[in-house]
Length: 326
Image (cartoon, rainbow, N blue to C red; front, top):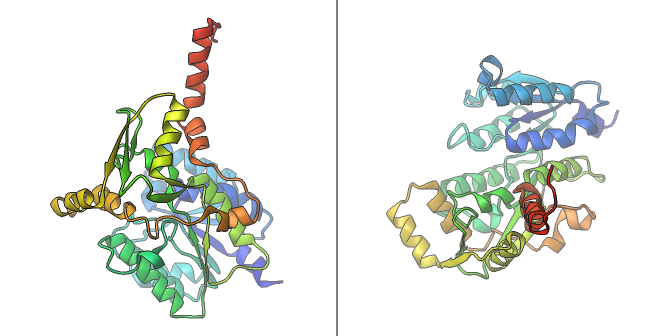
């Protein structure tokens, strides 16, 4: 039995949130014929006291053939290590829900457990370019995780760099595109770029990267749904919605002043970071999905399908024509 087959048979996904579910929906059908089921670790409360959404996810996971276990990722390193010793591949989709230091603790436990292959929670920007001392505590921890992984050779690792989730561009609290208020803010300048990918595409591409032959080892793999400047983003939003938006540039000085006034505000920190450009984007032509000819959802397609704007515009056109609507 080859190593790759063994890895498929002894695999755990940490977390079943937005990203975790996207990974599981793509991965589970591909490994369904393995002799042991794909295991998913969720918060104990998800099983003991599930919300309506939790119940839906649990039902879907079991329908996918996954074995669901409850485990508190805030547990000490020894408990994490004991869990990970049962598996040869760990795919970490937890984010920072357990607080600062979680990713470093999980990574060290993975190494201590002798896991063969690790996909860390690095689904974000290029932390090598951002480096240490960025002013973003989350970014600093992610950079530290990379240093720990590169300092050893026993555990293979694969980092999937995805950029920002596409939906975050339209998050009112982030305030880059506010569809309700009709505003677009350019962070840094209108020429500043950002790479974005939908969670669904991240799930699909992570699965392809995990199962790729020849095997991908100790590598940062870049993917992208779109790499777009804030100026082009404004143009796309206006074209898709058919509306005129108020466009306001927030330059670096303004964003740094905002950060000085509210240093603990998460969204203020993110706006200042994504205004820098460096490390926040990469050339789409060099990505794994482009090289492999895999389609992804760009910003325009996301707006048309995920925000319901296509249906809305069809209804508007039908009303103007006097068509009957069902």
